Length: 269
Ligand SMILES: Nc1ncnc2c1ncn2[C@@H]1O[C@H](COP(=O)(O)OP(=O)(O)OP(=O)(O)O)[C@@H](O)[C@H]1O
Ligand SMILES: [Mg+2]
Image (cartoon, rainbow, N blue to C red; front, side, top):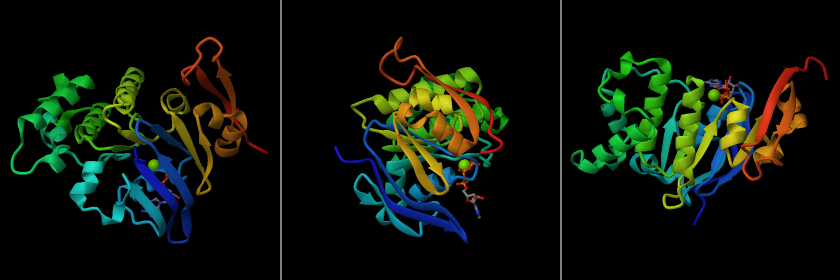
């Protein structure tokens, strides 16, 4: 199967601020990739370039072997769904209808039973069925974030771009949401992938197949959580002293057993 995403030599600047420098990224089907980096590192900018919200200065971005710039908006939204870092829009709609908006790229003349079924099953899989007929603008911040994630999942695209999708969620909802995403991405029949910007290093360690560490506009490190989340990398990129606890001996396989404990900031080098 072809690559879901292939980025070559991507550059993006805001005026003199060269935010992304010669970025190369490949994502295969069934891969969940986390993007980590400090505030302002360029995580959101990267996601927005892929989604064509921003136009890159140079380089190429291919989705399922097609140049994003050549895709119609409908085709782009069949291939990519996007959960923004903050949702400012305040839909005065039922939750069910907000999630149904995710089906728009698939709807030709009228909403089908399939579309409604997809919305119902997505709400169910995220434990949101009791919210179906609540008004979106009367939900809490975390509840809204879960609904926006449901909308992106209902869109049924090949690549899920998510910008800090768990930032407003409580501990249990963070785990449940990441487990649901992991299940969708791991499903070999569907061949979907996800690129998720996230600050929680332990969520990334546990759920990501690969981590991209953005630093000074470049990919400073890329690889499995175990390869990337080293004490030295964390010190260099985040200026904090970390202790890495790896219990792989007890729980072999996966990264479930990798834990990063942040001890203190590093004030001088
Ligand atoms: N509209 C804009 N105009 C000018 N500069 C911008 C704009 N949006 C972002 N930037 C700058 O681009 C750089 C990258 O921002 P970006 O939002 O991609 O960072 P980020 O890694 O997502 O950070 P955070 O963790 O805070 O979300 C920052 O230096 C930021 O100040
Ligand atoms: Mg951001």
